[in-house]
Figure (cartoon, rainbow, N blue to C red):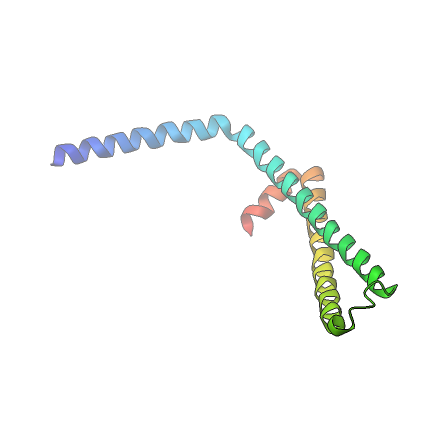
Length: 120
């Protein structure tokens, strides 16, 4: 039994050593993929946030111009929907600002972004 345990420990140590060597060899590529992923993620969230804001502005304009007249029995529903989408727009603006800051950090100071990301 001790012999099996020794073999398992030896294999584990060998595997850990090989994995460590692989990570060291692949570190520049891994870091570049990390930056690319966070760059793409920030852009996607900015686009989603802009779409929410555009939907809010479009619906608010329709509501303000009286496009929902004729739905008097559901006027409160439309008011609540406009307020909820407006609240989502406020969060979208915050998301745009936060993701834009991340984009600027990634593009101008990638090492600083990496340090800040792992210290969070």
